[in-house]
Length: 404
Image (tube, rainbow, N blue to C red):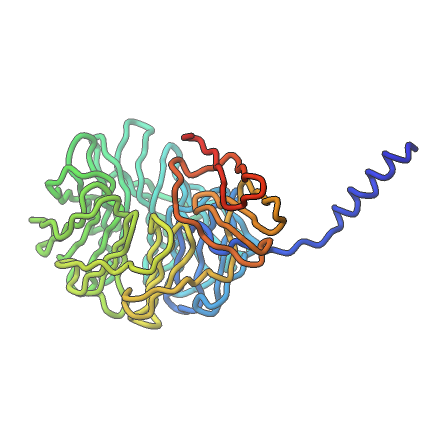
């Protein structure tokens, strides 16, 4: 055999057997997650990878580890069953479930010709779950899918026979025969659909608002006539008379999430592209409370049954935690890396490194990756193709992205 070729084989074999050590950057984009109601030490969230890795904490977010199970894409929402911290449902167009805490996932046979964006589980019966979305088998219609056997089979329940879309679904926390679906009519108003017979028939609560994409939906467990809806395009809306009238209580663009505190249902949190807001009067008034959260697009909010004052916020930079009702925040994933790293570049000085973390930010290290600094956001399209560092001047860097 040629000696040069043999040498190449030896080098490649050595590389293949080399040990690798993760050096960060820590954090990473978080889009969906859930806290177990029965064991608040158990928390799940999904990373932005393909296949998607599920991350789990068993100590309330002090430490995190990847589970062995993966999903084909990132979920829009994850829900942990009230009575079983190992049972988690996820939705991403269709439905998935794990019964072993994320060690493995099974795809559930959702109704065909449908696209689902949300899921909620009956708090009194984890075998019953509802998904919200729309069917396009005979025109676009807002629809809810219901399972009563843990996802083995589903019934498709049409909320609206006009052109419409469903976005959020919630089971009434006190009377689980009542189900709500938030959606909107094409070219019309946002709608809350309400069923009092497990989704078999639906009444329409027209909000009288032309905003679309109701990503927030809250039903007060103390009084189900109090409903709060967050519209992606126009802010927060409240009804105190079961949907007969609605009032706008906050102007907020790009609304992503809306959650309550389990043991203090009058306390709500809402998030958007830049920050978090808190209400202490069931949505009547709001204050901004997101100072200290890193990264834009607060996609995820989670509260816990263990401590009324604790709230988690997931952004493109990781998960941030507050233990004082959102007044101050700390980085709960500062010691855990779940970034998807794109291009990297090493300066001529041999110790300065630049790395792009997709859908997060550009990071810089001046000690060859032992520590990292998250640089100010400057990206337009959010994806860098390559870096170029000026020789002998490690602080002069060019970054090429899709927008130039």
